[in-house]
Image (cartoon, rainbow over all chains, first blue to last red; front, top):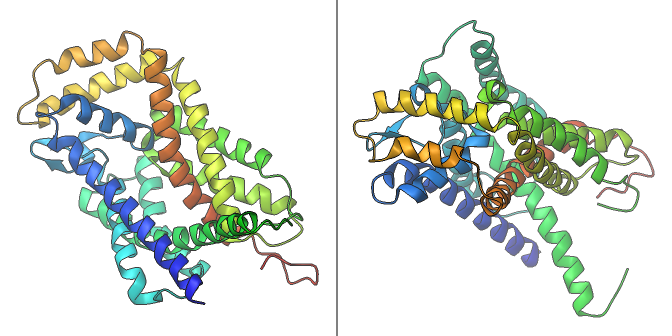
Length: 168
Length: 162
């Protein structure tokens, strides 16, 4: 039981630090544009396959757009907020997946907004994009922590078996 | 995550190929990371379809990670013939950015010429490695979501997923 809790804590810490690093990189791209333009360009390039990076749809920092658009920023900030909330809602007991209805509920706004913009039905203001992203992103750590916890437990168990000389 | 489940490689490759192609096409990349997450969800769905037992979130994470890595490879390969188009899109974006940004760093116009002049093999593999890490993280997420949406089988005596 104690070992289980330690694995959950380790998984949570991994996800929390990963999210922190990810969000720091989004800010670092514009912040380093003058002082370290090559590093800044590399960060923009890293995020370019996962975001259109259109300046009109992005927030600015120190005169330059962040490494991702407003919607993606919402998803990633929501992810970090969800990770911070996780211990208060679930503690460090064995993690489980959220109900499908919750996922559908938080996916509806971002799904409708993205589809409407793509089809040219409307052009959402940036605050709507970030809000939809925040809502969706906030449930994602509950999935990632559950999945990573299982993977860590599986590989941890296999390593322990190997170290004691046991095989399946 | 047991022996009763089918091989994860085929679903991961299919999901990754779909995500990689869609995210690599400039016009369609307005869906941002949703393509990668969607491709990993597809990989989980395909795995669940062929699996006689329920998928665990761990299964979803593994197949999603593999799908993310293959998406990164496909995206990079798709990017080679579309390189010229991508540079043109990037140039337009930088020009628009120069209208928005207060002050652009010196020599920013040449930066695109340098990257547009043909990236080296080392840069290609470095970019691929970083993309693979980013795509793998998003893929893991998509795979777990897919496992939660499609991975449950109706209660059977033989279901030993947990």
